[in-house]
Image (cartoon, rainbow, N blue to C red):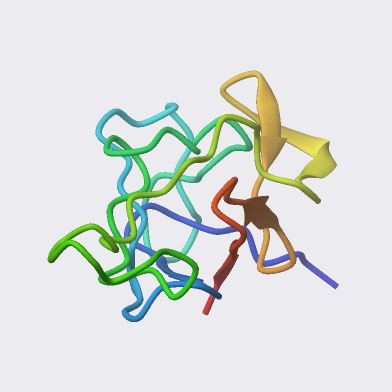
Length: 111
């Protein structure tokens, strides 16, 4: 069975955030999906404010002062469970099983 690889604009959600949003791929790795012709993601697409935008409010941060609990991702490490049999742009391709750990205590997954 073919594995479903994740593409740019796939929806992601942080377990500590309040809203899901699409992952951003500002520059394609040069590999696109067969059917949709969308760029594939790799394990290195984890950069805060480049690939991963704020998820609304963070449930793991205090609400005071106002605005202090904005869910800005802290994701210095690559995605986990990338497909090590399929490399995109020199890193494992991401699948629906891939996850990303936020240092604020949340886990980011594809929806």
